[in-house]
Image (cartoon, rainbow over all chains, first blue to last red):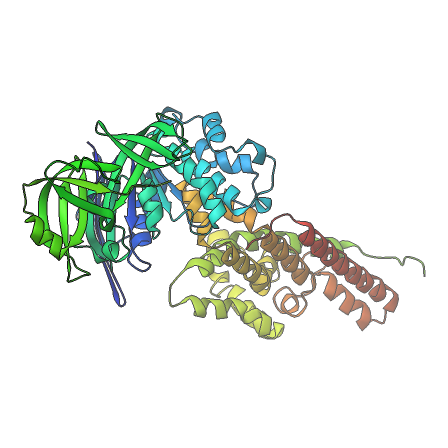
Length: 360
Length: 227
């Protein structure tokens, strides 16, 4: 699979930005970290808007920057679409003119994204005749996303596009972002400091801390790691499972989803059967059973699991973290007492029962 | 009061001078204003101060230096003479060059302010959409800075109209060549032709008021509000 290979170094007064990462050019790659960790700088370096004092950037086969050889492709020749935190629409142009600004400047041979497709997906048509200054924040951001898409980029860069919006507007945009990926198959690099956004949207993740990469990998792996205090402290670690909705059981208020051929139950969802659903399991919501699962148990969800690793819990001296493989990594936090009673060790087969939460 | 017997040449000459000067100033002043708005050079404040000098300098002082510079052995006049074979002082071209210096701040400052108000952000957006630097300047920065341009054109034009000291020093008082409106008024007063002086002064006053009124009205109605 094609990759983005990025290495940048900048010395700011009192802050060293030194990032090296390789990410697959597929789906949505979240760049996550607290404010001041260098997320926006990374995005700007990739866009070519900030020039690192020394850097290397390769997009698939194409080298966009290589300071060792004096190569630096300016932003206008990189074919990236950038969505900034503020929409940055052009106030002297109409909505339509804003949308076509980048389209007109892309070579006809590279145009594979249709105007009508974008405007239908982002429901832009009612906005065409409106003045840019009369659009709401959410509408502006939708136009900005459409404008970036119609540039026909090879890579879409989004710098906290939802940060300036209130909760209602965010809810309005997130479904668009989820569709974007599926509809246009353009890799998206998405900067965020909102863990929930990342959990909802990302397949891959780059975790930044104080100007360098603390972790990178598929989101399922990163959220099952214990060595990342940012995630552990926000109680977000556990597992992320990609499931599909099978059926609703309205009389129980439940929805049955399928994960690798096994059934899981969640509180009833609004999506129709067949729809993909991302499910989060928190490590403290998991309990482990050795041997056959209890014939009668109130737990609805149980998966066969293999223990891969056992370690101390970073936060709680009386707890132990057990890393399991259920076809996807899963982390369980259990008491030290249970750990000793069950005599758990790597390689052992167990059953994990848990409460699952939908990420929508 | 009936319209007196008048020589209209000074009026026509003044309009020509102000018009040509504004065009030259836009060509020279735009890159300067752009540089001032976006540079991080430590010479920026120095250049800003130099540009502002004509505002505080007595026109005679400025005129004196320009006279020297435009002379056949001067900094500008010397090379000009080598190049074209003719001198600059006491010519219309010399007057245009002098007026360009004289009215420079009135064009550069509004443009500088306007470009600064536009800022880097819309430009970055334009570049990321595939626009070259020049393309982004013409299709994004300039239309967004339209109020600045309007102010620059009007102030530059009006300020050149009223020019007196510099013209007198550099251009002298040659009818049809360098005798502009303000000097014509001065001449009329010298020979006690108050009617003519009144008439020309009133015209200049009315004209200045009119264009300023138009500018402020148009400015208010322009749809673009930067930041």
